[in-house]
View 1 (cartoon, one colour):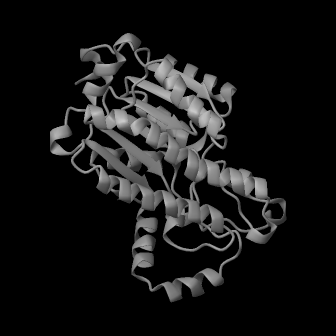
View 2 (cartoon, one colour):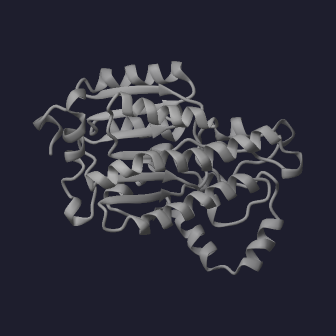
Length: 303
């Protein structure tokens, strides 16, 4: 269904928005035109770029992040550029389970249906685990694992009942190998990738798809937020390994529409991860041992 063929008003959210994403359901593909998409970590970085790339196509965007002022700014930008777009914003700290539950309750009260769930919010921390801040570690586990899992659990039954929907989990190339200095972050992303693959298999035949987006280094706020003061002199990853947020988001959305299980943006990282998957674990351990505590592959966004 083309977006201009039938206007999706909030009162008609249930059927109109869902119908648009079902255009290619029988072929196993997802059509994002006119869909209703929820994006966590939407106030910066990859999440913000998701909002901008989806805005010309979506019928409704639901933007979730901690920083309400940023969400308001993005909403104003998007609606000015896309007058027919419905934009809802919701401030939530996804490190707190009450806020995760509150987000689900708010969606139900507002009768907002979700066709596309983009679990993008994430936290990182660089440096030795032994000197890490326990509160930071706890928040990282809560946002990267618990919030993603609980929000998916909350929204999934309606997608299954509607026999259509898509879930895009933003993981990381860090999920494919042990990374000293990013041990907890990499482990949380390994969970995201594994969970995505398992859930995808569970949902086969339901009309709901699951994709894991696994970028390598991306220029976002991750470094400024995750880097500790004592690691300020650590070198970043080589410039040729980086991809832009635009490339990451474009690859993610294309993967959703093509119903791919995993996508790794960028030719360099695709090749690197192909080699990693063929490399015996003992060799990976040796390679990891030679890296600095601020080793390299990470992507993140505001939570």
